[in-house]
Length: 410
Length: 230
Image 1 (cartoon, rainbow over the protein chains, first blue to last red):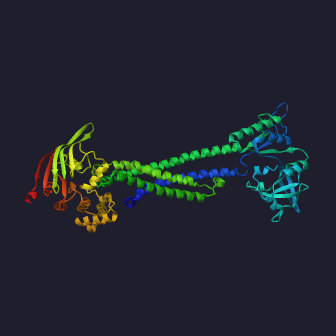
Image 2: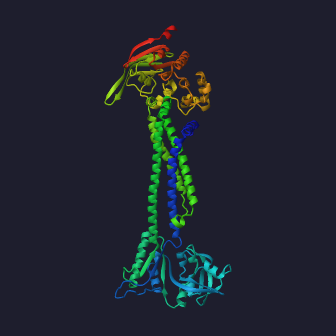
């Protein structure tokens, strides 16, 4: 392997037969290039899907209600369903062990005023856990806490863009703003990866909202984070169970999808993971197919090369070359060409992927396509092995060449 | 040097087999210059292949340099060829992408000699065949006679016991034929055993002993005038 003379023989053979060497190298380089691009694009798609769902907690599910569309137990269609605190308490008590985070949510549209500046913003009235469900990032101050809920405090957490609109560069934390006529203390400023809409928003305690605006116990939505220890299937089953329970509780027809729905991230997660699995299966199949085609390609060329060199091997054997030395020479040449060409294809592929970067995210949902170092190492090993296989089969044949037959073929 | 007793060889042709050598007895001593003559199909090439360890015999005994050749695997045959035998072929059989010097040095590579040393030895032998100035030329830049001289240098470079030449002048014109045969004669004069296969009387006359084959058996074994003159 480290025999300098052997390498000299091989380099001479490659160098003196450049077209042949380039042709066989091209097959491998092209196969590896395709392999790299395929895997890169697949991982780019995967990255996109992951980031698309990264805005909210991965284990989020929420219960929403509208109007009934089916009569049930003597009740007419078109009845508006209203969730209340008792419903929220029922769910959170009944399934305590299956729930990690819990929060009610009330949607409001309020004008928020500071000095002479005023604008209308979406305001959500929530429980403290909402921070984790929405993945709210605190830039300054704090989020709502249990005490705010208990004491029905007039405190508000505002989004980064709300602060920009009302305060500009000035300090906002600790200032008071007028929310729909009442004075609220700003206790925190947040940002959110979900985009501008999520940051042009404010949060107040759910209890404060219920007291001030209508003095009732109505809520718009129940948001839950299921226990992350649950398997995806168990989480989906949990969501279905909550849906059935709530229908029964609120006298809704079991099939009335429009009146009540439970949206469960577990289902989306399952869908995405099945999709990704299928994608990688397809790409793995095509990718390895391409590799196999490349190996067969180089093996084919090697067989042709052996035929072309039959006489040379015959001469070498007549002069004292052992079969082993012929096999060694052919295999080593094959491995060298495969590895060099494959490395070239791999480098080119990686370069193309990094050049693509995020430019295809908008149109083709491909984000930061790249091949992991594991795949690179794997591909290198495959290359060397394929070079061995591609070389060994024809080399074995070359070593079997009988000098007399080879030398007779003029 | 070469001792053959009751040698038989047949080749399978479909279901039948062709009996090519039908009991050859031949004894060639060290320093002899022997020609094997015969028309095509007489078995002379087969005999050379067996003597050259390029093929195996079916029956009989073959001693090379006192060693019984039997159950030879490819590796062992390759080593024996490298050690004891030098080949000269009708079609020269030089490697086209190697220079004259590299072609001559190739057997030494398989002997395991260092590059520097083998190029030096190869150059000495090229000089011996009068082609020192052509060392860096590729085979297709040489004339037929020059190619055969390179091939002879390559056959001699390992300092073998026997040089086996298969129709060495078959592809050459009369003038070059003479010079190649003179070269083989010079080599023989230095003590090398030379074993030539030919169908040309004039070529055979240059050797010292002529063995004639017909249909797989030896029909005559005589000394030449050249040998008697000594």
